[in-house]
Length: 87
Image (cartoon, rainbow, N blue to C red; front, side, top):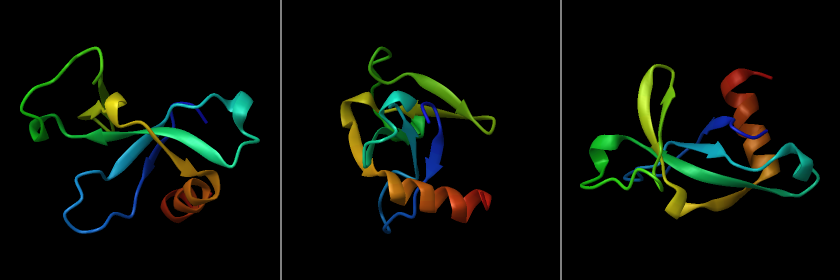
């Protein structure tokens, strides 16, 4: 669903631990989801506010990296959700 934050199982040395789903539920029948990575503000030398909005996740600040938009398979996101939330 739009706005859901998903934790990723990431390879060592990868800065991205979470993504936010930016795809509306009207497209739920597609096999992929449009996502943007979330990164900690201190990992960037410079921020472009309009392209990297700040959001709060569990009381911590994160930047939504719109320039790095990508897709993930919907079944992988669902599997990650089940691992993390049990739902």
